[in-house]
Length: 441
Ligand SMILES: Nc1ncnc2c1ncn2[C@@H]1O[C@H](COP(=O)(O)OP(=O)(O)OP(=O)(O)O)[C@@H](O)[C@H]1O
Ligand SMILES: [Mg+2]
Image (tube, rainbow, N blue to C red):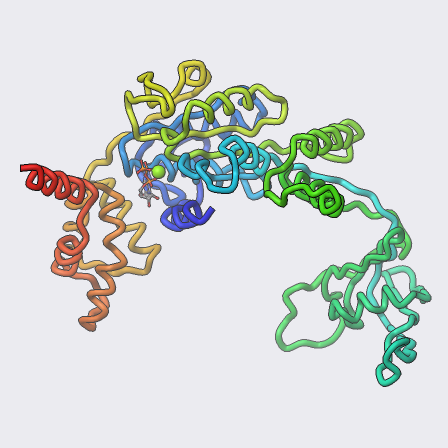
């Protein structure tokens, strides 16, 4: 998903929707203006949190550079780190290795979290002391290997010395666990985990980053573990456990996940949910440049929205009335009508020069670019005439020019020069059109 990571970089200034007590701030959480769209997005966030978005999807429409992707990113920030958010561009479904529907299916399943709760019997405490017994290596008499030993664990209430086998000693040594660390040992599997450094153990000038409290209560106890995976993570785990068999049966080593694997995962997850061992966290699947999807992808999405395990889907496009890809049918936004029927549509509008000024200032600050007042005005002009995206993209090269000229601030001349060197999409396409016309004569 490299394209998406890159795109997210240009939205790094966005921390949320900038709404307080239901009121949209003119400038807030890195967002400027676009008040209606932000209010609508905020309502959508409330609906998602209340679990009232099932079977529906959202479409962001507006001209290029009016903040559609920015608002989708803000929705993700509002939903919090726990809620899975998966972004993909419509063009990314055309991959060489995977079928279009498989790309979409994987993206959908990456957008659904499963919070798993597991109770396990463990030995937990501060590792007070460890004695390792060594013996000769069975194959190499010159080396010694740990063959077992004793460890002393301590809580606020209890101290116990346990005899343990080489496997546990080996894990302690190889994980770099030392005396004074809080650890727990899973009774069933013998797996050793380190929680961090116990508070009050050792004097440090520089405080260790991973300080944890000394465990309380008994050493041998039932402990609850909570972790969040996505359905796709579970699919991968389930299909990996199968890979050894595949060697014998000669299955191709494609990254595609067979439907029966998914069926098994769904069945297991449903059982977990019913027995309260797990909870589903439907997240968000954001598909940018949705007009790049084709009819097959749209019908897959429409069907998927109906299923019980579906994330919230947010589409974005800057296309008006156009052909649905893969057909000769023209439709609003190039999308089939049955899908359009289920969309809540949010519109983004072109920015005023004042709004462009605010956004350029925020981006310049984010990228550490200092602008002379006239340079800022030049960028505002370019942003209004060409596009906001174009103006913000010129920040980095303009700063480079200024630096080469031993200036810390970008001047109007720097901006003018980079805008000569790098042309906007409008200019580059009309340039090619002119050339074509000349060639045809
Ligand atoms: N209201 C806003 N407040 C702050 N920054 C914004 C706002 N709108 C857009 N931006 C920033 O301006 C740049 C362009 O906006 P964005 O990429 O979101 O536009 P878009 O509508 O998705 O365009 P396209 O149709 O080309 O995909 C991004 O860096 C974005 O973060
Ligand atoms: Mg976009």
